[in-house]
Length: 133
Image 1 (cartoon, rainbow, N blue to C red):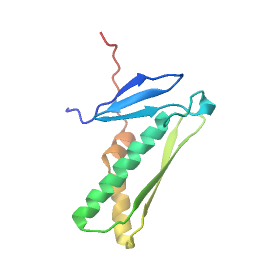
Image 2: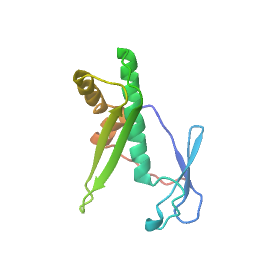
Image 3: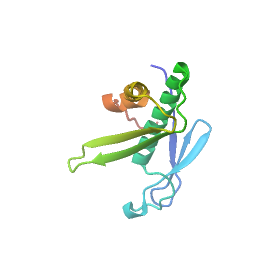
Image 4: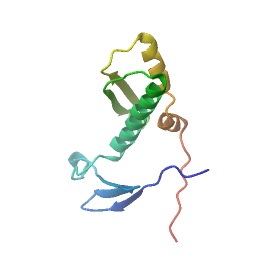
């Protein structure tokens, strides 16, 4: 396997505030105030949804460019739900400002279900955790 992404997360206090570095980008992750954080940045599940939404929008743009379809502004709205047993589901709604046929929408919905991040989340991924030497 080859690495396709890398991130480093470091404490940047107070409390749950952390600095996330990935590539040349830095952002802040935190918990909302009601969960004991300072709300200085997105919470971890917000970041998961952001990654899924970005992958969806980018993949749809790539597909549309190959088909020479005009999508206009693409919006991906996502909501994560968890039940009392900890089972999670994500609702994803797509919008394009350009007029599209039913056939185009059917294809875009199919493509959204096959994006790399969608497939990874649906399949689950092993996570190996080790202690630094």
